[in-house]
Amino acid sequence: MVKSKQKHPDHVLIHHQSQQYDRPFVEHWDRWIDFDSRARAEGDRFIQLLREHNKKEVLDVATGTGFHSIQLHEAGFHVVSADRCPTMLVHAFENAQQRGQILRTVQTDWRWLTRDVHERFDAVVCLGNSFTDLFDENDQRKALAEFYAALEHDGMLILDQRNYDVLLDHRGQAHEHRYYGQANVEVWPDHVDHSLVRFRYRFSDGEVFDLNMCPVHKQRMRQLILDAGFQHVTTYRDAPGQDEARSNFFIHLAQKA
Image (cartoon, rainbow, N blue to C red; front, side, top):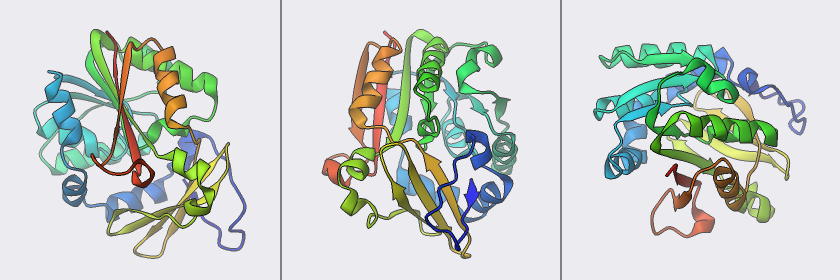
């Protein structure tokens, strides 16, 4: 996470994935994002999808500060929480402790996931637009292959992404479209092109951070998932019944068998 430099608002800083999530941003995220409010806003869609498909053993490969891992744990799933950023995992573990839980955490790089995680799971979840941290197509393919390998023969992947289609194909609207994930943080696309979307995060205390992501069209993401060996992909909008152009996220549900 790159703290924004107001003197050069148009300067794009590209950093390695793990460097984007430095301690100041993680601490801000934890301070201003209320888990209970986020749970009410997001609902239990992922929990219901897992239950509908009778999944119990879940690998959360983009744990972050622990929101989804904690939510799944509270719902009765057996969860292993993975992230490449140790700062994130420390905060996730502490957040779980505050709610009376103990997370099973592992630090790992998606590209070598099964080197560090030896179990097999009913489901792998990769949420929070985390997959588009990866800019290199070979890395994207390697990560998806590792997700596939971490699943049981009838396992399921749930992966979400920002609606980059509307950002890339309707750029005039992109800079006007702000995403209010929570009352305490404002997020909007500050820079958009076909190789980079830079999201700007402004917290209620005035602190501003930039996060660089790789824009991937919905259909391209679906094809990458199928190329990894998944047999079927169903894609949902974040709000059922909502017009696709107004959806902030797409949710891909992929079946291994």
